Amino acid sequence: MPVKAVVDSNIWISGVTATSETAANLIDEWKRGKFKVIISEQQIIEIYEVLTRPKFSLKYGITEKEIRELVQNIKDEAERVTLKGNIELCRDPDDDMILETAIRGKAKYLITGDKDITEDKRISLLLSQHGTTVISLSKFFNLISS
Image (tube, rainbow, N blue to C red; front, side, top):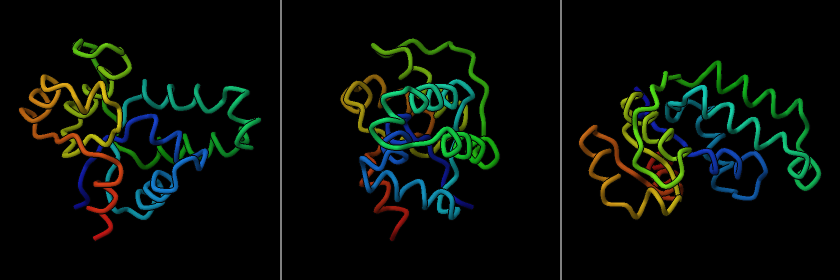
């Protein structure tokens, strides 16, 4: 059974806009079934709203059709969890959403480069109590590629 992971929104966005080759490759590996994505409806909405901003379509040439296809693929293939909004640990409420997604989805990994998450010992402790490890994009990619 593939390992379960939460992919932070900024990694999804970097992968779609091809600003990170590793992020784009990670999305490809997910589509190939190398790991199982855990996601919440709130995160799907966040990804969609960011990618449909006019500056993204202009700068990166992303079409509405491509964005809809990605979102539909996520809805079809990812394991979705329902959030209660009862975690308030981060400076950014969107980060709390990611933490709760990892915990509720029983994710083995939370893939992120967000320093608010990676450098906060309280967050690492909370997640480790639930069996989740915070991991960088490159380390996770190497893990699933080996």
